[in-house]
Length: 343
Ligand code: MG
Image 1 (cartoon, protein in one colour):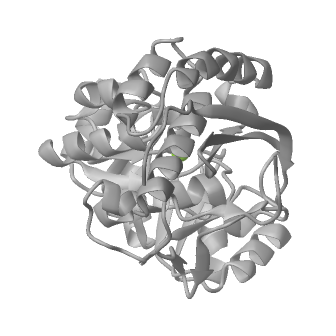
Image 2 (cartoon, protein in one colour):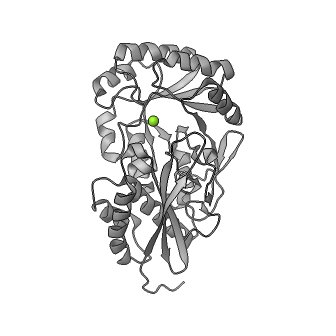
Image 3 (cartoon, helix red, strand yellow):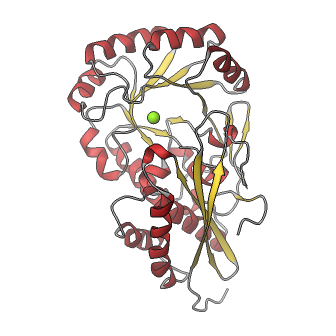
């Protein structure tokens, strides 16, 4: 192939209202970066609680367009991403949408999957948990039934009575559970007792039991070594890992928190050096963002990449679910493409 100078062109499509049975309405913006007939796709998933607005996301894309216009292939994705990162403090989902599209584009130009770009072991499937949100007993029973293919369930806890919640789950299933407390407890002694009780009930890990500002209490809980403890709200980006390394057993990495594949990979490398477990998570991404994260599944100790399974209107085809596993076909780039023309 002979390369002539042709700049990268960024386009975006919004708002795409992703809807599911279990999640609140989430706005999504899809990105497309094109070069010489190749198209790389990305996604910014904007759940309201993250505080990233559609307006700010579009604003960042407009600024990023100017940077991308100066680029052509071959290029260093890492250098482009660093320049875009300096455009502003926040907008992590918007940055991720550009990072994912750049990886997809580079993979498609070079006919390599992201796994190959990062020289990872080829991995086409892994067990993933399926999330059961807080709901009425009737709905929880239905959700457990709907998740009957899955071998691990993830429970959203942090309710007024988490023992009652787990007892309710145990009326309908004996599957191993990940429990996400979402910073719902404050007393470290109560938390430690709960972890012991959880363990008896077949819980295999607990995510973010205490608020982010209780790191000393969290370190004390983790030192008791009852269940693995996973940081979520306490770790967004690479720079956060060193602050929590003694307080948790592992970290939950999400592309929408960490600005994309490049930084997720750096987080994985640092976590491994520090002997922290790696949990790959997601917000409510479609098969676009979820396939991008699934490219890193060879590095994971735990996987919670169930979002496309819960979507009613996924505009991408990519990862699939079979017998509790997430399956990633070997394709160039992130392994996902729009089902119909999106742009
Ligand atoms: Mg969480």
